[in-house]
Image (cartoon, helix red, strand yellow):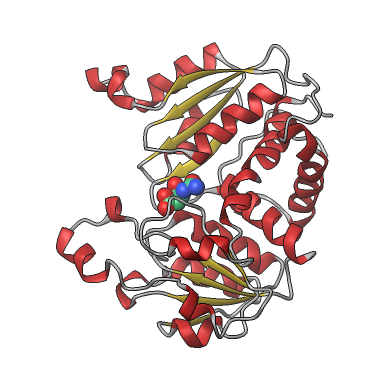
Length: 309
Ligand code: NCD
């Protein structure tokens, strides 16, 4: 498969075969992600890391991926220190990054920003989250995690919990899980339901997600529970946020009725939605999931830059 020069904007641009190929390649890269093996397949390549929104895992795992494969990183994590503050347009910032580097990773608060960036850049652009839109690289690491733990992606009952309205990770993941025909259950406060558009995408792929606000019932026979943070920064109205804050919490008591092999995932950061006491249970997969960002992003960088293992 030839990925050289390709943009990664939405998981909807990827076929099942392509996703499987990326996940298999990411598996081969695990020892490199852990630092147990080293090969400088991205020697001489430069990544522009443009984070207009806060990030810990996504930015650091992209940087780690690039460094561990011998490449270099330039960029910013605080747009207040850039010429955006002087009124520079996104298009002009992208033109500059395009001329200084071989690949651009962008996170932005505006939906569609990554797609716009791709129009102004010749080098590949990777969407690291665009507002409440999409988050394709998170989606791939989520799929990688489910496959690693459950040996398969389809045939699992997967509960997506929380802020399904503004959460970009669950928008991408719902689509991708439907490609694999997983059984989907969406659990959220009524004001934070999954957008119609995403449900329609699942339906077009032949999956009919169930929707409920009854978490206890939904997790009873679940194989995967994917928890999300309420996306406070996306609420136009603080009052609306106050109405839903603390509306769900995963704790040991709630897990009494869950399957023994239920895995709990979370893109992180978590705030109050998972009690830290859950961390020591065998259900907790979220930290391992975050590590999986490295082999998956290594795979993507090496494929778009044409430096395969
Ligand atoms: C998520 C994001 O930025 O969309 N975090 C991440 O990339 N791991 C989830 C969130 O911010 O809640």
